Image 1 (cartoon, rainbow, N blue to C red):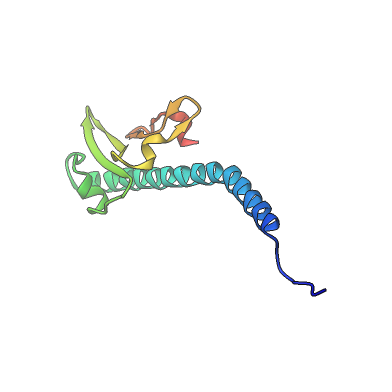
Image 2: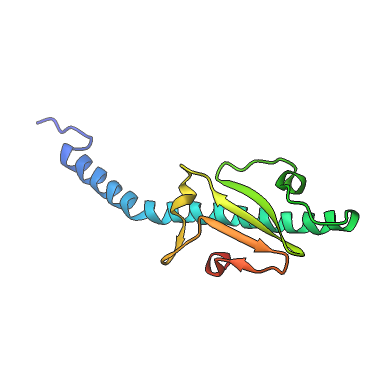
Length: 130
């Protein structure tokens, strides 16, 4: 009798089932990592805007409310950046764009889809900056 080498259909189905199980376990963790990494990019941009705001103030009589002056028009695919004057200071804001995966960004029950940074380095929501 001739013996064939290769995989049986059952062996292939078991392999596919194990692979599907591994993917089902790993995907949520991976997508959470991607969302947090995009949030970190937004936080870095807010810090750059804060530094640019202070540099702007050195050569101008007041702070600017133009985000373009601060970040040079560089656009983010996931966040909309803005600057607003507030008394003697300013508030820098990063808001998740509609349709972006960042709208689902949460730390526990706290939404991290909008991040703010003030002249005094007050950060909100605080849990999202850790």
